[in-house]
Length: 439
Image 1 (cartoon, rainbow, N blue to C red):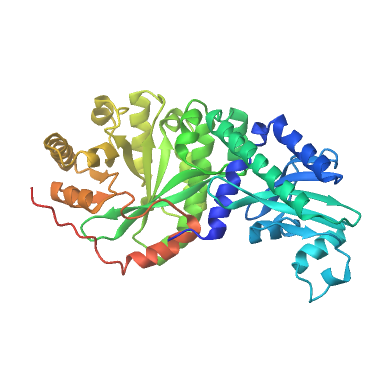
Image 2 (cartoon, rainbow, N blue to C red):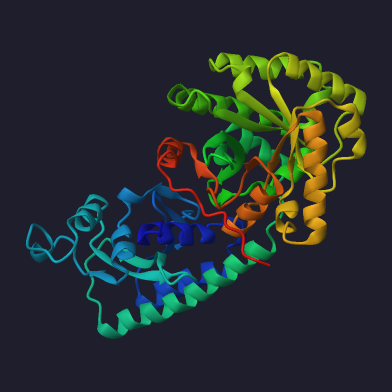
């Protein structure tokens, strides 16, 4: 589906909301704007789909960092129009009532706040959509010449350049989040599960939905796990995150499985859980509290940092399987899983890293796939192949003998609210062609 103009505007605007990257030059630009136009107050705002954020202000006290609802912002009209707006006197008869050329919401907001004169020009981001405004206003009426309006537009171009440099600093200097920030994100529910299907390649049916952590950062927007999971793996915070993701995922899943009883839910569990004495009871309690059967849950054991010893892990995994959970080793082939895990830890199967799917067209890749599938068949293991993102890879995967697969060909990760529609649509979705191109 194509992004709407509002989607583009919102996503672009949020790339300019790193307050830590705001430079004194932007503050100076607000002051120069007020002085040049001889208005007492000047501000630079960023506006996304829900809020107005004041980056800098001059003449209005310590207003930088203020956030108000978009509906309460006079500058919303400027962003929506993508054009300058000039109000010389909000109380003038021609500006009040149905005959006014100005948006009624704008006039009412100005009058409610005692603002008589208001001039704003849109600021455009790197994606060429309006992301905010440079505005000036006064409590007294003011005339504005064409030359002054042109000057404000020229100053806006300078502000846009400052904002683009600020965005560049935010990207270059963007450091991994601190443990304190990550803790607040976990406790505040900012990190939520999105879902990606695991598909039965033979029937085309969705076998399971996998919960994948996404950080809905209040400023930076949706953040992929590569930005924060590795850092969490170096602390006990990963345990808290996994439990919260599991709790939310089983709550979401409870509604889906009633309509689709054979559906499974797959959830990642860090190896750090497995040496904790309360691991088994904690996971069982979270799943049971949601009214979901353990038999519907697949636990994918992940590990980017070293977890427990093999013996501890083997005992914990065995206990989880006894409770009814299906346990897979995640990302086999990515380099972290030693042979000792495969020989000492009894699991129900494993997921093969996307690098395997990417190499299936080669003689070596095909040989590795055959060997892994034979190993799985001998142990009665389930195998899921990740990274199926093209019809060609799907054809090669099925030709090699894979029964289950996952990848962008079937769906990218989607938010919980989109899952019911997705599950309903897959029942009538035509099968993807799996014809191999002749060599």
